[in-house]
Length: 237
Length: 226
Image (cartoon, rainbow over all chains, first blue to last red):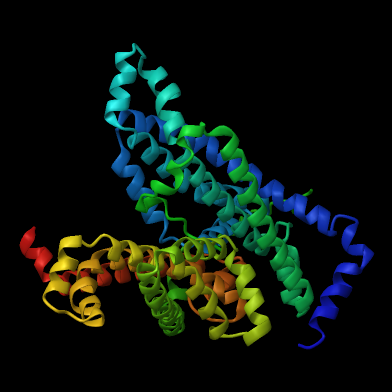
């Protein structure tokens, strides 16, 4: 494909690509909307449950095992099945995206809270903190690096899987990848794929900055040091 | 931002159409075999690449952070993007899927292999050196067996992940169980998707157990100890 760079350039340079609901800005926004809404829902579910399970220590093994079993389930298949059973479009996809974004956040939150040194916990109690205060003022700050690692993993996953979900009737950047595939327009596919990759890297970068701003200074270094096996991200889609 | 309105499937087709499964069993069997290849080739290729890289990173520790950083960066690139990029190089087909899938195995394989070697007791190393082992022989006969459990733990994670990822490869014409998902979407018929999901999970579990068995066979001393 010797003319490919030229084709890509012509595809991008076309003013139609930059306007309207099929233009690049709208597609990027659509993709962000799918990804961020599912990520927010997953955080809203996984974070409280993970904190609770980690704080009380009850049900932890079950949560970890469920999440590890989930690793073996192909997200592509779940997206397809939900679309057929619940309906094509965003509803089925949203449920599937949330379901796949929960495990990394849940296991990391649980592990992060569990790994808080028992001496640290005891001294907090010795200082007169009650259960909820210990959780909020000691365990959560300590667990933040791992919690963020989980959120970052899920964010990248959700962006990737939302691309695939174009096949079950949502828009976003998958429109270019699969539209290009259907029309055998390789330039369009390539631009779509590169945009997905860039969005994914940008999301990683932004979340890393948020993490830097939120995690207390003394705990920043922990991130690299504590990488338990459960939190190895799995690339999907 | 207006997602396509949801179209629910209200027909009276059953969730599992046993007649379809019976009719298509040979085809499903072929896809399953393809999927085993789609998993085995990339993991093998990944291991062949990761092993020397890891040995180098154990020997020259400064290599480790950039190596892991690069593998981690590749990890955040969605597979559909890598697959599409590969179509430009190798066209449609199985090769197109194998290379990206192998790339995804590198992060975990390199990390676990390096950790496996780094975790070996210093005394063991010194004893081997004192006994006059040559470097290469020491790595293969003393250090590798000791690092094996951590390496195999990485291999298990990678294999299970690859089984799932390989279903996406159907989109670049690589065959495998993913074909059942695209078939299900096109006909809005749930049975193939369910069959594909069940087989993918079964394959992942079977391979995971097989690797566990390999570890059990290769590390007899751990059995005696525990």
